[in-house]
Image 1 (cartoon, rainbow, N blue to C red):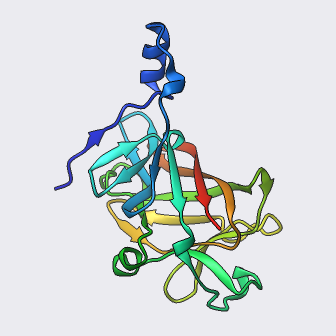
Image 2 (image 1 turned 135 degrees about the horizontal axis):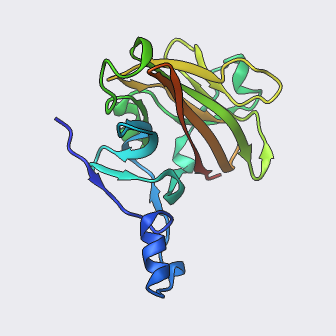
Image 3 (image 1 turned 180 degrees about the vertical axis):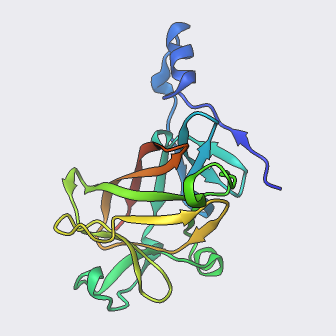
Length: 214
């Protein structure tokens, strides 16, 4: 059974406490995660509200998304597999869908989790993760996508299409796919998790920072 060790970070409750105490919060830097098994999208239900966290499976630590930078190093570069939605460049930066590949490359193994959600709470025992926006270096980008081992897109940041923005997941599940970036830069990816509880739509939205190095 997975245990949880919640990290309080300065942009949440701890920030307010530090500010009240008159301490300098600028000395505290966000956490950077660059390797290992990390559930980037990790939903929780506290009985009244949905929440999104980043869950580091290596240390069993949960982070507020605003307090984490996901690092994609130059070592993540691989040959473009030739899927049409990955652009015409010869290389992409890939966080792979298997742990062995990720460990061999020394990069993150990103997951999408609903493990903290129990059956019988959400309608159809399902929630939906939606990519609501994506930018690279401050501008809308089509350089980010998530796809499975068969080449089927789960998400595509192309702002000119409404397809591949939303995907349902059963509660109590753990999912992995390839996370691909076509250019280096600083990405800001905003995701929403949404489900229906007692006929009422519940949701939570967070923005994730991903730095892709050339």
